[in-house]
Amino acid sequence: MEHVEMKDLEKSYDNQKNVLNGINLSIEEGEFFVLVGPSGSGKSTLLRMIAGLEEITGGILKINDKVVNHLRPKDRNLSMVFQNYALYPHLTVEQNILFGLTAKKIDKKEQQKRLIETADMMGLTELLKRKPKQLSGGQRQRVALARSVVSQAPLCLMDEPLSNLDAKLRAHMRIEIRRLQKKLGLTMIYVTHDQVEAMTMGDRIMVLNDGRIQQVGDPITLYNEPANLFVASFIGSPK
Ligand code: ADP
Ligand code: MG
Image 1 (tube, protein in one colour):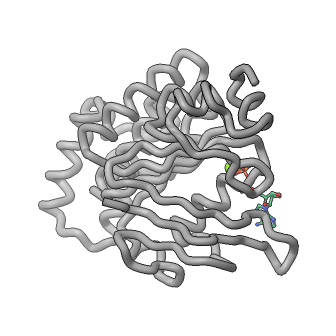
Image 2 (cartoon, protein in one colour; image 1 turned 180 degrees about the vertical axis):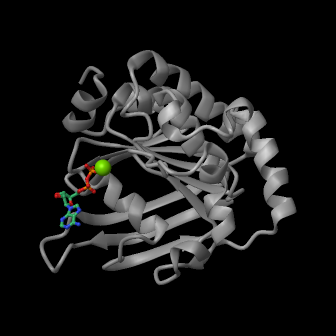
């Protein structure tokens, strides 16, 4: 089943020229879908439009077969992890993880149940009483992921979530995120500017340049049959 569908999606900021043009795309339920492209190509803008954080200036966005162009973010049943995964410095790990649930008025018993499960799954059980400054970069990243997981939203959006981590930790977290996505059966839309990350993580990949889709396909197709020179040189395949 299609989880997210875009028809002729466009975006312009303040009536300037479009930063996204003619985005037509369907993302399947349970798919790990990667948006890749150079800096400024429009990846974050597209993700923020799906999240409802940015106004859609043209076209149609559907989630679960329902037009959501004007639906508020909190009614879209999704979670988002940002690049700098800002945690609240004055709150404990536990309070950071539960922050979104408190706002959603989910009852205390249910909150505790989810907290225990999520902390266990993410290896955070021993760290719940700590403050963010007492954590390593990787641990903070796991807290940000836990905050997203605890919401139990079936659609997860991530915008360059690993860009602040060192290479070793990044490699480890790629595997952890994929495992989590599979285990929970999430539909994932994952933004990166890193070709290796895209090729190793994605079931399918969309290559974006200058606000236009260059190609959508699985990693092997993109590598073996790049649609144009941009894709060929960006992915690093021969053409
Ligand atoms: P990416 O995430 O791929 O680096 P962005 O979506 O951040 O790209 O940006 C796409 C284009 O939109 C860029 O040209 C950027 O300058 C522009 N842009 C992004 N945010 C804004 C904004 N709030 N106001 C005006 N222009 C913006
Ligand atoms: Mg960006």
